[in-house]
Image 1 (cartoon, helix red, strand yellow):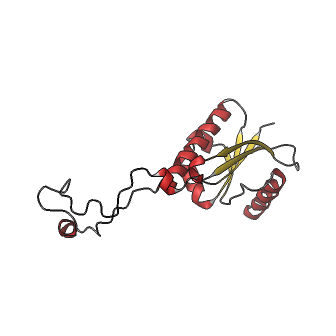
Image 2 (cartoon, helix red, strand yellow):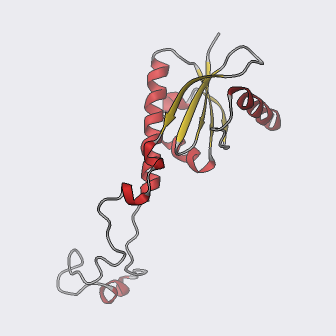
Image 3 (spheres, one colour):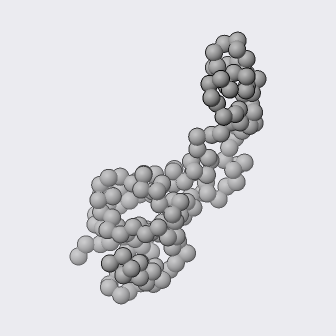
Length: 168
């Protein structure tokens, strides 16, 4: 009989369950924790730039034209407050999703599961989708955008069955 794993995840924790007999509680296989999600942003970011750190800089903007608003305004720039492309907490979530993906890939290669159910918080589900290997994505038979990381095996089975009934 093929084994189905259920992963209940958010940016800070991923609990992995294995199906037991039909109607029985899911059995917890592993509990992965993202230590980066527990840290404060000040602990993660070590090289903090001030919001206006490049305001008067002539670097990388075309020589002696001066920096700041006078140079940026003709080009249509919105302002000179520095905005990182990704926040530290988003970066930590992406790293954790990649770790989960690697874990699932190794477990599947070892023959520990053949099907997968993913239940993740809405903000983490997209990150996880992006990082999961295509071979593992093909094994997903149900995806739920809810955070069930605090549920035990019996509660999780009931919640997922209720979700399947709604979508059927």
